[in-house]
Length: 473
Ligand SMILES: O=c1ccn([C@@H]2O[C@H](COP(=O)(O)O)[C@@H](O)[C@H]2O)c(=O)[nH]1
Image (cartoon, rainbow, N blue to C red; front, side, top):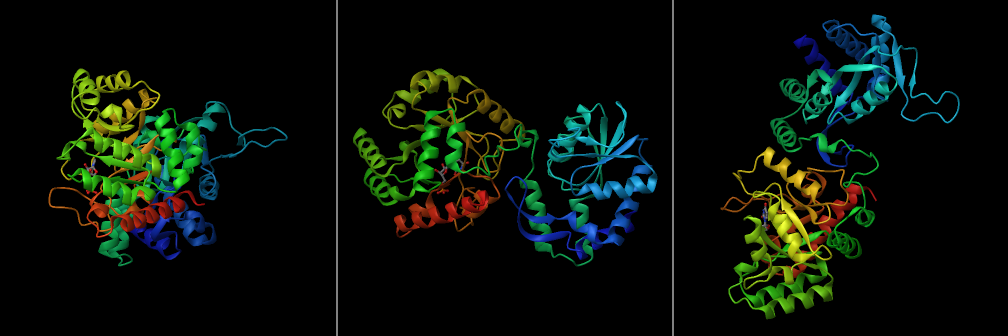
């Protein structure tokens, strides 16, 4: 089987079914490898090989009453299998006809027939689940799917969670290994794909309840109506009106520098993020200046306080002390570490009408102790406080089905070299196109530029162009 698969991998490469470069996926993110198996229908020899490979695989599985291909690419593949092993096939329509039977499943079948599903490529498994749902609604049982290629991005686990066992002829790792051995790709591509697979894992949250709502494809202006928090609405409107998804990390230590910076970059940003406790000559006067500048240039003041204590302490840290954060920062960040008490404290002290919170679910720092369980717990907290949470601070698209929430991504610079204290950078294009950022945080890329205003304008343009490419305007 190994040799046959290797030859088949070469066939796929030769007919241009596997491409390397920069491609957009179904959910709007970028990928360095694209599998377009629709072309197989034009290559009967490759189709025959695929059919034989699938049949060899299926013969090792339990018996099925019927087979069904996931529309559309897998339809002809399932047909060849059906014809060659004499296994009846049914077809799933993507839309019901508006005349005649209005059935979604075409063909002859009995209720409780056991159906084998066939699919070409699996990323999240969402298309398979849509097919399973329609088959189940028609009374047909589906427990197993055979796929040509598993992209290894989490689809197998998601299907397992839904009671579907996935069998794959090839995994992405295997495919790339075969192509490397045959010198069809070089080590740089192999490494790029390995990194991409590691960084683009998906979980059940990407299985959208409503396939029409995907924040990565929706313009900011259209997302306003989905936001439940008033500051989130305000932010989305500012982003849309000013055409900027740039947040400045204004990490300077003197009031005069902060004011000057705010004036210089004001026209180009939607958020001005502060660490107010690093300002050596802090006074409430500084905040009055900042509030005026924010009003003049229409941006939001955002204190990156990263609350992480018990609720009662956070209540004081938020509203009392010398900084009185709640009185001027419309947005703050919080860790999810100590649980919901923090959010309740912020909610109580601010009222809901004019404050929002970004929860930190991942960090850009190397060696962070945040693991997958912590990140998932943070997303759960987000779902429980839709009226308070503005979004999530993270590095990868952890959610796509909540267009009213904003993904804020720090660690952004044109020069992606990183610093000597663990900060890791990605380019403006990649955070928006590959990592799902709605708003990108840029600090030293602007503050250390010789002309911060011009640098901010440049970042604004790069980020906005990437956003336009993402939504395909
Ligand atoms: O994971 C995180 C969370 C927050 N930050 C903050 O963003 C800026 C980044 O500044 P640069 O100069 O662009 O590195 C800074 O204020 C951090 O506190 C982050 O970097 N990573």
